[in-house]
Image (cartoon, rainbow, N blue to C red; front, side, top):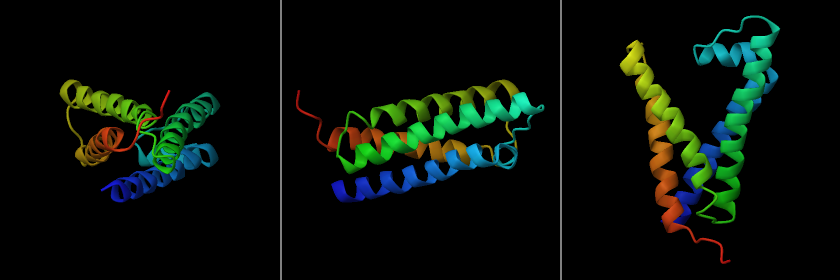
Length: 127
């Protein structure tokens, strides 16, 4: 069980790291995949900074937490993904659904569940 959770988290971390690097290198193309369009250089800089930070922090904390089997560290990306999922749910309620709206929600929801399970199964550091 622990090995499977560690592998799933590490693979998810790699996926989020690739997404984060994509926003750093080419925010316009990566933003388009997320339905985002920039409004000039300020918009590109915002996407480059904020989306890169979100995905890279999630990825690094997932991979380090899985590698070190640190359940506490996994609560950081779980919180990030839970807030992202909450924002998407509010968006669907307020603005309505769009084609394929459920796909990113599914990824975030599964990520939250796996990370919360792993945070309980993997050891916690001794203080």
